[in-house]
Amino acid sequence: MKVLDFAKKNKLLLAVALAYVVLALMAPTRAAGALSNSVYYLKEMVQVLPAIFFLTVVIEVLVPKETIIRSFGEKSGFKGYLLALLLGSISAGPIYAAFPISKTLLNKGASVANVVIILSSWAVVKLPMLANEVKFLGPDFMLVRWVLTVLAIFAMAALTGLLVKNKDLSIEKTSGQSLVIAPEYCIGCSICVKMAPDYYEMQDNKAIVRRLPETAEEAAALEPTVAKCPGKAITLYPEVIRK
Amino acid sequence: MDIFTIGFLVIALVLFLYSLKKDKTRTVEAMKKSRGMMGNMMSEIVAIIFLIGLVLHFVPPETISEVMGAGNTAWSTFLAAVAGSVTLIPAFVAFPLVGSLVDAGASIIPGVAFLTTLTMVGAVTFPLEKQEFGTKFALTRNLLSFSFALLIAVLMGVIL
Image 1 (spheres, each protein chain N blue to C red):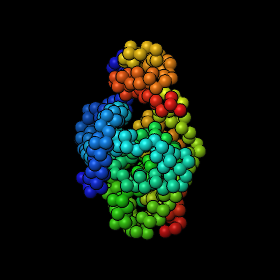
Image 2 (image 1 turned 30 degrees about the vertical axis):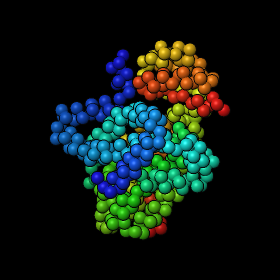
Image 3 (image 1 turned 180 degrees about the vertical axis):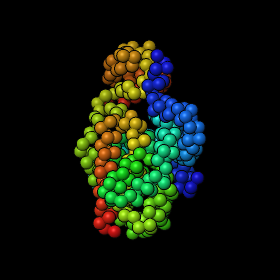
Image 4 (image 1 turned 120 degrees about the horizontal axis):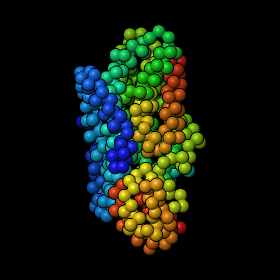
């Protein structure tokens, strides 16, 4: 069962590993070539991920939810677009590095449209890249492509905002619920059920919420279960209760 | 490490230390949360990195260059956009590649399509994007990016 869970959680990694093994058996030099190609990206990851980790922590602790909602929320309007573009443009790293930051922002109330802008501009609009583009393709080429790309990013953001609603996202659903378990992170260890059987129960090998805490005291009493959860799948939203 | 990556790390670190000083308990809590979130992504990220190595080996820059220089502009633009979607090659390789093609007299439209999908559309990162943001979001964003990349390419061809 545990092996199966591991395989399920890491299916892409296992598929890639398998591809390498097959390739290594059939054409060892090709496998070595592919492996050496990856080194550059591995270095890039090691250089960028620590910064991303610190930034997600900083956003979580230092930036109040209200600020995120005001700057990047549904009602932030065009100013929100510009801010998101700026945030995406000044950051470093490949697009997957933008995922943790975007997720943290979404959880704190950023809109879908603004997250699209952050993700897109994160990948496309980079100062060192623009300099490179001028060098090899000329300033006119760079400028026209930059303007068109920014316009396209804004259009895409507006369209995605219309098509994709917050409920379509697989993020923690804060809407009205004071206690949430993210099923994709739950490893089914049942520690929370043992600690607080009134609030949690097991269903299909995953913990689900049985009863929501209704007072701040109840929520506080559940904090140890959040801390003990090995998958960090449980989140408490005491602010939902206070309202 | 280039100066931008270093600057990014320094800023993040300074803010982090400030946050640690301001509220240690919440910072430690947030660190646990981030570790959980990023830990969940790590397996996919490592998989992506080695997948890029594989894809690059079978679709090397020379092949992409051949595709973009091919006769029919509409067809080569589409192929270039697809090539840009499935590969993730560093900017310092991509720009000289397109630059040399344009210098050699090829149309800029396939080159622009390639440069734009290269960065905005991620077939390789799609599984991770889907896992973290949901299928609908990942599908909408990538399909829109692909379409807009073609549009940008055509407009560039008209303007320049």
